[in-house]
Picture 1: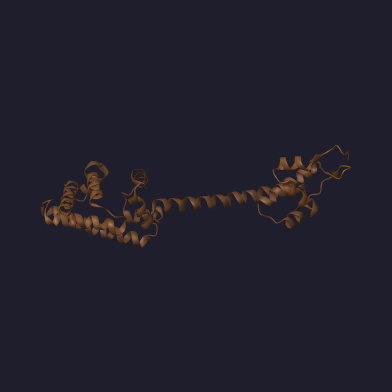
Picture 2 (picture 1 turned 135 degrees about the horizontal axis):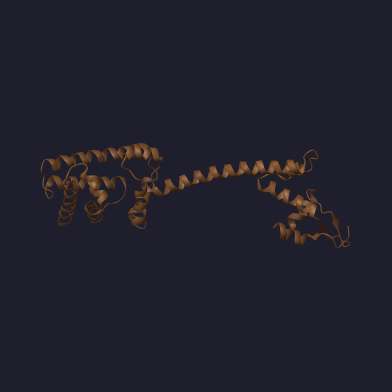
Length: 258
C-alpha cells in the first residue's frame, strides 16, 4: 500500500477512544496488526483493520480475554454475518442480565431508603389492607432531614418480617387498651389516659427513635389535623383521635411540670 494511505495510529486511537499504547500492544501480540507501514516504520491502518478493532473492543466490553478474542476472530469457519448474530445474542443476554441487576439494586435502594426490609406483599400482610406505600414517601418528604428520621432508618434498616409483626402486635394491643379506656369513659387528662399516652410514646422510643415530648405533641397534632390519621383512630372507636391527642398533651404537661 502507498505510504500515504490508511490511518496513523494516533488517528485510530482517537476514533476508537483507546490509547496508542493499547494499539501497540494489540499489534505486538498479533491481535491487530495494521495492514501497512510507512517507509519510516509507522503503522498505517485501513478500514478492514478498523472493523477488526471494533470487533475486539466489543468482545472486550463483554469481558472476553484477548486470547479468546483472537481465537474467535481468526476462526475462518465463522462468517461476518454469524459474528453479528453472535454479538446480537451476547448483547441481548447482557441487557437482560443488566436489567435484572438494575431491578435488584432498585429494590435494595428502596428497602434501604424506607428502612423496611419487606416485600410489598408482606407489608400488606402485616400492616393491613389500608396500608399505602405512598405514605412512606410522604413521611420522608416531611421528616427526611430530621435526626429522628435518620435514627429510625438506622434502627429499622435491620428489621425483618418477624420484627414488624412484633411491632404491629404491640400496636394492636395498645390500640385495644385505648379503645377500652374511651369506651369506659376515662377522661383524656386522667391518669389512665396519660399512662396510655406514655405507653404510646415508649412504643415509638423502643422501636423507632427517641420520641421526645415535643415530638409527641407534634404527632398528636397530626391525629386531629390530618384526615387520614383521624380516620385511622376513628375507625377503632368514635372520638379516639381527639381523646388520644388530648391524652398525649396532658401526659407531656405532666412530665414537663414534674
